Amino acid sequence: MLSRMVGAGLLDRDTFEEVSNDSSATVQAVAVAVMAGMAIGFGAGPGYGIPINFVITHFVWWVVWVFLAYLLLPAVFHIPEVEWGSIARTTGFAQAPALLLVLLNVVPQIGTSLYMIIVVVVGLWWMLATTVAIRQSLHLQSTRWAAGVAFTWFIPSVVIELVEL
Image 1 (cartoon, helix red, strand yellow):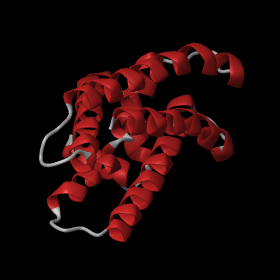
Image 2 (cartoon, one colour):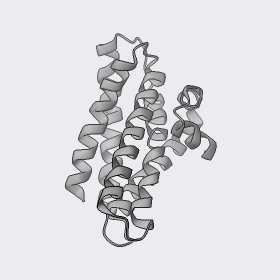
Image 3 (tube, helix red, strand yellow):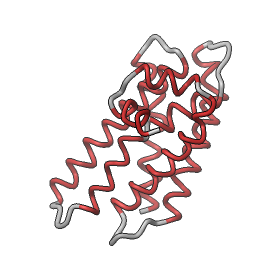
Image 4 (cartoon, helix red, strand yellow):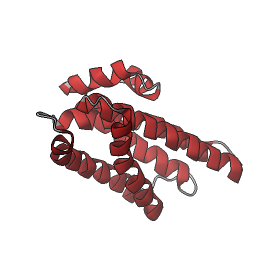
């Protein structure tokens, strides 16, 4: 699981392809998504607590988005067959970069500028990972279309998470 998380973090297409095709990796992908929610909540939350409502909201939004992607994307991209699990596994592992947001609460006396730099860098990294995940799970030829789909996950996710915090 750790090597897959690293591969996802490195934006390795082969890792996403492997995860996409390995149905036994679904539980691992769920674990990564839950850990990402915890890391974001821990990093952004006050003190050293993890807001449980935040973790639940993060996880539920991810599940809802994967379900909507499963229902809508085959028609949009004229893909004959898409497996829900493939989208879930790849986008679950794509959340691996978000685990770095735990640094926001671990590093003592982190300044506002450094805080924002970490948030932006990790956010962009996470968006890129999600783009690669979508491209591999849907077998898209266009990175632009994959980025557009990733955007539909990422922007509402950020808004929901800001509201929760």
